[in-house]
Length: 237
Image (cartoon, rainbow, N blue to C red; front, side, top):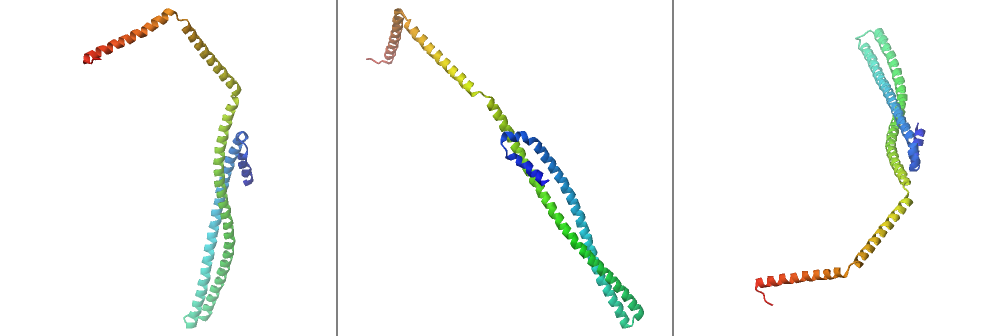
């Protein structure tokens, strides 16, 4: 599974155009792969919990049998003490003490067996715990890489779209059109200037006389207005 994902995430190293064409299926496959990994993780955690439960039971059994071993030995000693003090018949005390010692041996044997099984089980727990931790880290890493992969795919798609649009623009024909328009504007400007010069050339002598007199009339009226204002203000030359 890890090998598949390593190959999938290396797709992003290619150029933008080829990335867009190749990304859609790998992303979907990656998402499915992550979902599968999460299911594996859930199963692994369930197995880990079950193995831990067995370890706890074995530890409890070992502890109980150790306590029983010590307890049977204590009881055997009490029976022998009662025999020694004369509080109990020797034959009965030895019989019961012997039974207590038998049970002590059985408990001791069970304690040893449980401890051995517990040691083996704890090794399994440690190994499973390491696998679960690694799987968790792998899932988290792949999820982060997938987020980055999707972002790169969107960027590549936008770049491809822009480059496609730019490739459709015929810069040569656009420049030619602008040059043609510039030439037409300059031609119109030159033609307008020529018509202006023709208009000035077409003025008659009468037009020139009337224009000159019109200027004189304006100046005369201005002089009269100025003289009237001076007289009103009592200013004399």
